[in-house]
Image (cartoon, rainbow, N blue to C red):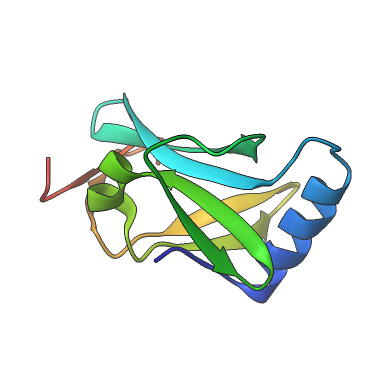
Length: 109
């Protein structure tokens, strides 16, 4: 399961409603950085054959099945730090992250 905080759901709903083609959020990981993976969050415009679909607080979240081992149970939050705002990821599978915070690793690697 993938979860959204109330604040993240409000921002996602607003963001998605401004795009005619949006059906939800696409959430996953890609190989990147010194720790192994980076989060990927973008607008989903179609369902892929191996997608798992989650819905929380009215927002659909599409995750390719092979990504679930790394992000199952993650909560997407919306955070503001100084002048920057954006999604933050609270991932119970994350065991380490790089010093700059751009990548992470899990025991599943």
